[in-house]
Amino acid sequence: MQDSKKIPYQLNVESLLSRDTADLKHWSEIYKILVPNKNLIDRTGTLKMPYNIKLYSPFSMPKIDIGFKKNFKEICLDRAREILKKQEEIKKPIYLFYSGGIDSTLVLVSLLMVEDITVLREKVFIVMTQESIAEYFLMYHKVIRPNFKILSADRITELFDSSGIILTGSQGDKIFGTDRISEIYRIGMFDQAFDPLNDFIIKYWVSKGIEERSAEVWFELIKNQSSDFGISLETNFDLLWWFNFNFEWQSEYFLFSLRSNNKLTEEYHKNFIFAFFDSADFQQWSMVNRSQRIKKTWNSYKFPAKDIIFEYTGDTDYRDYKIKIVSAGRLFQNKTIPLGIDTDFNLITDIDKTFLYQHDNSFVQ
Image 1 (tube, rainbow, N blue to C red):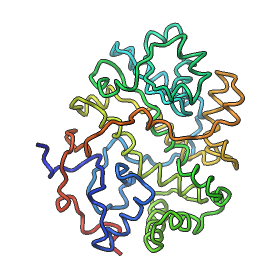
Image 2 (image 1 turned 90 degrees about the vertical axis):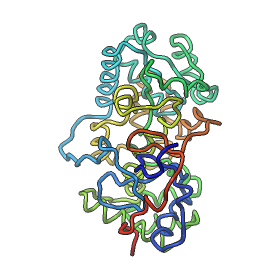
Image 3 (image 1 turned 45 degrees about the vertical axis):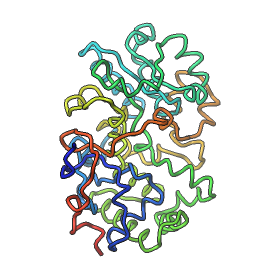
Image 4 (image 1 turned 30 degrees about the vertical axis):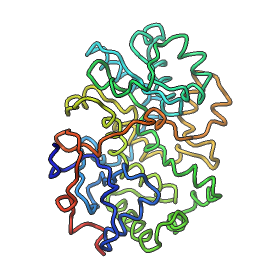
């Protein structure tokens, strides 16, 4: 049995949500808009959460480099070359987890831009579902089906076996902003998201059922924490982006590892799992280029990514009208997973709440 007195890197916090004390109540309230497998970790090391979930050192927040000059396309192509170089070194194929959404489509296009398709087709397997086809049929019909070997997403749990490199479009939403923006658009609050930072965030959270005092606590903690780290949150969208970029980064990465049938080591994670957007350059781009994430229309979200896809496909409809929808989760439908992963990379099956609780956490008012 897994030792419940182990510090986690990733943890489903559903059983930890509590209103027993004021600190736990304020912290727990945010899960009225989050699923409990999104455990929140401050990558800057400034805020202390009520429960001790350890930051994986490669995910520490880099200091912002205001002189960073690389453009988005350069970063995409450099990242594609880096992954293909790794593939050449280990002589094993790439399993591209392809949902058909903007992020995973950009991953495929970036690879195609740096390697001839006749060569790439021998190196890359496309792991996908029927829904992946429907989300971007043109890419499937013209590029994937004629050129690549396709694996069903039903086989995902078998692929974490060192037979190939797992490549995902993970962290795309983290560098661009937040998947919350689609909901904000649907409820008619989109324009307010781009106003100078104000109590819009509190009002939005309250509209989702979060108690007002808890919304205020979260808002003030985030505002002070980002400022202490040297990040100026100028608009409401900036705060939504920072929440996603800072607090949810680690959780999204490890959610892929939880799909494995096999025990995964730290070495395996370093050599066989690549989240395409998990690089220092992408993070610097996100921090420096605030205006490059979305314009003043909902369908402009992730426009730098769609511009690159258009450059390869010539598909103006996709560039101009494709909107963000929740895609990646379809790859994992009907797959139960463990509670988490501990710092020895063992799967967690049981939680000791008392052991993990931190009395001096940042939510103690």
